[in-house]
Length: 314
Image (cartoon, rainbow, N blue to C red):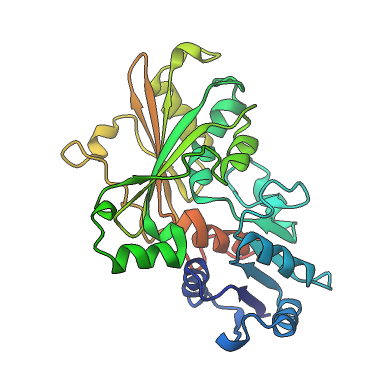
């Protein structure tokens, strides 16, 4: 049996990357829409209802509009926008979140793809909150350094077609401290309040590193950095795409420097634990276009359709 797949928003960065992945998968038929018809309501409606799985790579309002077009019980939706990530009627598409999360995804017809920064934060922090090591009211902070591809076509064009001096240095943004990923970062990490999160965009195309400083003196349990590494390694030991580096993480540095692009063009996410007695630093490294977006979307589709979870992601 061939499954019919439609990407609504096929010409954006996420949509194009999803098409690349889909081209490597058998037993599917990709439904295409002509460029001049991609905003035609009736054409999109017909394709959405013909498809077994629809990827939505659209702004929030447009995603909601596409979902409203579904008039059957067959079509499954995988939405890459922010629109439904904390909606309890949707399944959060982070398979590694809980032991039963894959089952929820497999049985769901509505799955939301996590935000890129949220993915790195939640996978590092959730197990520690769930195990009672980090208190739910911990005053959490984190920052992320990411490539400009995560900003979409406009930001990509600015970096690739401009010689503005300010683009050569990393730039903080979302300094109103109200980044759109914060609600899901709080909800799925298990914290009672959102972290203070400062994202930074750099002058390179792709690759993301989320850094989370921790102070053991305000933990619920007396644990060391090595204990944290061992706990995370145990939590993710059965997960194909989440890798926890050994505690001797200095061996993974290059002349003392961290290479945040090591996971580019893969669906892997690596977690590192650095630190000593009084201070710990967690770093999640991944491709913002892979595990942070399109790769995660494909991983969810594979689970929903009963494919090997790695299909198309090699």
